[in-house]
Image 1 (tube, rainbow, N blue to C red):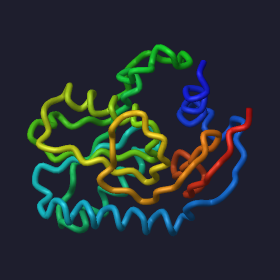
Image 2: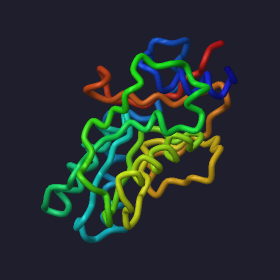
Image 3: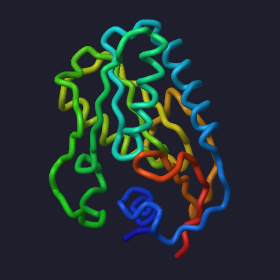
Length: 202
């Protein structure tokens, strides 16, 4: 297993905060996280003045509650409910066969709209790293139809991209070393709302 894949697993598996990672610095408090989401919603509303045909999709797992928070803000801005969904694109990843085997091989589309055809899709994730998860999510979305546009919104961009993927909305951009990660804690998955820079211990 390569160091990159090991670090990615450290970030993505259910043992999220139970592995050998040391907290170095709080990047966002609960209040700062809410403010970042406010700013992201404002930027989306500026790019798309109409909510017609808009869908907000959260990437599993912490992108899902972030998408719900973002969707709520957009619904308030536009004065109408925004359709919200979620997807797990794990099995669309190009490095899936190199990753540790998961307990289930079933695709887990928690809540997917009937069609994305011609829609404005707001794709939400917690941390943007190599870009491989986003590429997989795009492929999963295209299997459901052809959106008019897909906008990528991430709470934190930590750099180290391996694919030419860039976000449209970012809550926080931070430089990280190869032995560091950004950990997003968000309720109800976690017991707090915060973002930390952590060091991955060997």
